[in-house]
Length: 304
Image (tube, rainbow, N blue to C red; front, top):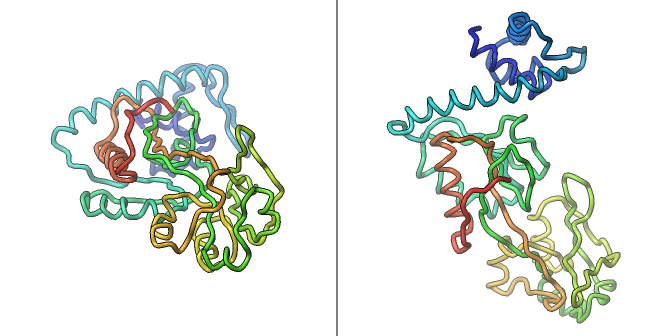
């Protein structure tokens, strides 16, 4: 491998903590990655990585060298992009991680595919906290604010959690008037996929947050089953407004305890920091910001 290739092999191995994982991303053998790093160490007369049977770690000198190598490779990539962006159409594979809320994501994704047929989307729907850089994602869409200096972010839109139930359920079980009434109702809960904890209901009285130990009639880790259960009159659920807009408009679901519920969340799109980004990623960022929440005000990209 040439000098630039050796730098790339070192950066991938250092970031992924594995010659094998680096080889998979570079499309070469693990032994080729190991030999490239060894030649680099021999040329520099310094050890960059500690090897063990399970993993590799950076030496102090390796950590310093890694930061400089990242900047060098970023400059090379930026130069290539500057030359190609004026003539290149958005194309190629785009690997994106998205939360499991397909009723929100898919309409915009389908329109994007129609508009940019030469971009091959590799979509990973998951609520786990992925590592954008180490797992090779071009971008991720997630709820909330994720602090990571290696990432840029853009606000896609805001949403609110509300408590809802079907009219037939409320006719049968009664309508709760205060949060304490929920203790006598069937409560349908969402469990976080990452932590395994129940998502708290956004109950508030005045300025005081309420965290009652609610009944757990059912617990699921995705939104769609909760919507179906609530529509079927199985109980009360806490759901994002974008997911049940049609049910609310048609009266299949109605708000419960609106005076005691206060919540505001956001979706953000995050991608690795770089001075220049590829055309395929640029059009995806711009399209999702404009189309995922068309009525929401958009913000300029900021550090994550």
